Length: 320
Length: 227
Image (cartoon, rainbow over all chains, first blue to last red):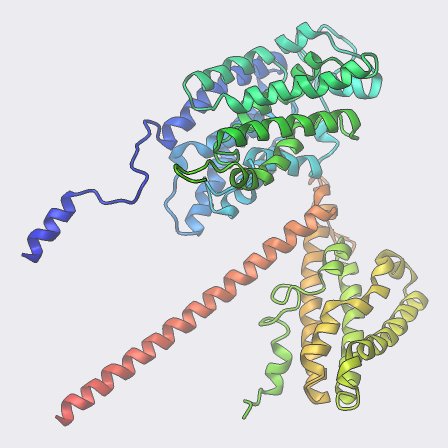
């Protein structure tokens, strides 16, 4: 009797709610993200040379090895085949300046995974975007190397290699819009070409890996907040389109801020999240000491995600 | 009746079991601020230990005279006296170090370790035990600050105590001598020390369970055999 009951129970799949299955597994999602990161990667190689592929390879390699080692030490299942370490590695590589030192890249990758992700408990538990944690660490560790930009191939401007934002902040030079969209300007490996980022980003939105609300709210927020300053004084403050295409804003919009783990889960929360990031970016770019602030803006808002989730919790059915 | 703790344990507990930095998490301000180099950490912890020992001793001697209502004020007066002595000695003998530590030597007056040990231990225990406790806590603080200072100095400026350890080809991580590096180092060291203590506890717990099981089975056997 007892035996037959247990046999029966074994045939049933017993689990707690939710019971809805997603067609996406973590593994599949991560490889789709890797695919979407190819256009910015290719644009980086085109504009800054084949060496950039080496930087990204080193970054990915150390990210994977660190994850495997830490999982082994903590006696957990080694989950490097889910591709999340690969995504972190590629993203970190894309936000580093071209021709960056390989040793420093390795340090950044190890820090991203070890401190940014695994110390919080691994994938799904990290508060901050691991790739941005790695970049923030490198920015603090090697401030000079992190702001040494290489002149891109096919550059219109033959003299300067500064990023459009640095050129505007320190020399009051407004870069033309066309090279900023194509990507032959100074900047991090993957952030210069707006077209390449848009291809990857729109692909992610179309296959519904990335929720459209965060990119849309960030772009609208950027146009709104920088537009206010532009309307106040069009000579002193650059126009909203410049802000939109300059620096790492688009890369951050599509690939960093939309990270599943570190962004809000409610629709209203996503709008708040996106607008706040844009507001902080505009404040840092216009009033801050640094020319660029997308990284810090996203990290700051990552810290507020649990709060946003709680504030925007949807009303349960029947609740007053 | 209260269980009497051995003198040795009174000293040793401050180093590991209730290490002021890693377990009590006291005195964070100097820990984070001055450990940019090993020598700063050593000097700071020695000055703190000096004040800790003498003030603990004096507070322990006076513990029955100081009225309970004004005890904190009385402690502060005693501590401030020794801090002034330490500050003046450092200014006279080690002016460079004194300058490097800046306001943190006078700030020992409000250091939580000293006030904490005075309140939690010295005011309730006889002078010999108070001195041993102060020595142990001082040693614990010394070890913590020296380790932190060494790690940050090594990674942040390639040296330990001014001697070059890492080759010139190693590019120093500037972040390690910035406040962020202090938090990262402290957090990692705390995590390591906690995990070691946790593991030790688990082993002790398991041996206790084993012992209990043995005892149970043996009594069970004896009951059976008597039957």
